[in-house]
Length: 120
Image 1: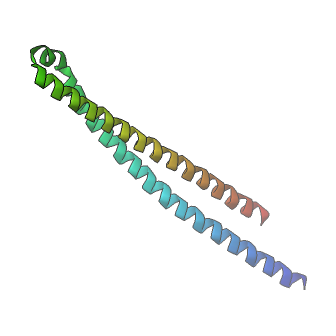
Image 2: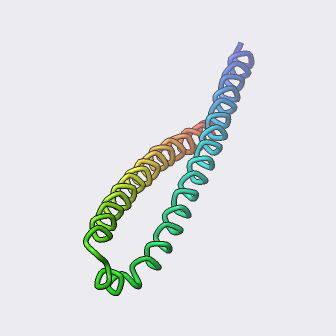
Image 3: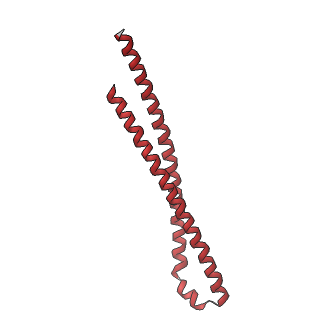
């Protein structure tokens, strides 16, 4: 009777371990995708910033030579660029938050796996 109970307990522990391992693997895959998405957002942001640096390098000269309608158009364009940057920053913050949440889930899964291993 004790042997049967031990086998059943071992079987349940094994199932729990397999389930925790499966959760861990799924979390890892989701974390990898989120990290990749975040990397793409960062590359896009770097590209945009590099372009802005070039645009701003000669800005004062262009403003001095610009006529009124050009200045109005430039102000409108600057506003659109800043709005796009704010939206991109928001997306970047959201992606970072999602990645942090997934990392917390990963840590919880890892703790469960360790606890399961110690119980056996």
